[in-house]
Length: 328
Ligand code: GA4
Image (cartoon, rainbow, N blue to C red):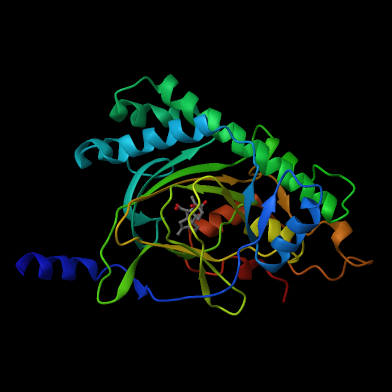
């Protein structure tokens, strides 16, 4: 009894939501091996800003190797894991998300995608060389980045944009400011009939995000009407979401989807997410070919990714970060 009440008071700092939500909405499924995938991708980005991809060609070996390292890291004693923290800007984080008081039932590792140095402290917790761990991260990131670029090129073609690498070149740039994240959501019993929030609702600031998780549910996306739909777990597929920057570049045609993760009552959830971002100096603005003649229907002010990132990191997770950059 005493343990329960201690647990209850500790839990109160976390947000909870009703766990019993059901819906018939289906998540768009894109088979990348099919010739009609272009138009399906465009429709999914317009309707949901979110879809699942199969036949993605990412080697299972890269996924499994990295996942087992993540599991090993997260199973280490807390005193060891903390040696790889804090997560500002890269490293181990536990429960606290960002710099403005957000919390979730999650522990995580944040890494940039072009620095070997990030891996040193993590590798030492794992008892392996930084080269070994960073090879494992690089193999995985290189493969998902390639898939993200292929998808972005299909999207540009689907939008009839002449320069098909207009989005993908931002991720391919050596200065691309991309982030990689490994999340671990420990199981957490339903609390007074409600699920604990693992990662609170938010949109991703970057261009595109590529998520893969183990076979544990928890991810939900928000529909335009504000209801939440659960995304059934599928460890063999990848889930892609449109980020704020792609919403701006398409002048709002593609939707940066609000999403969140609820803690699972029984199982640990482990996810790995690549956030493809542009170089810091890149100007983010609606593409002229997607604007009406005269270019007077742009919904957004022009800004650099640096400006947007600074503003995003000053916000709370659930904030609407784009509204500061909308034209009035
Ligand atoms: C959301 C997408 C990525 O996970 C992330 C997150 C970042 C963080 O965890 O530090 C942010 C969040 C994310 C958006 C607003 C700010 C920054 C937490 C937060 C409250 C790494 C990112 O780039 O933006």
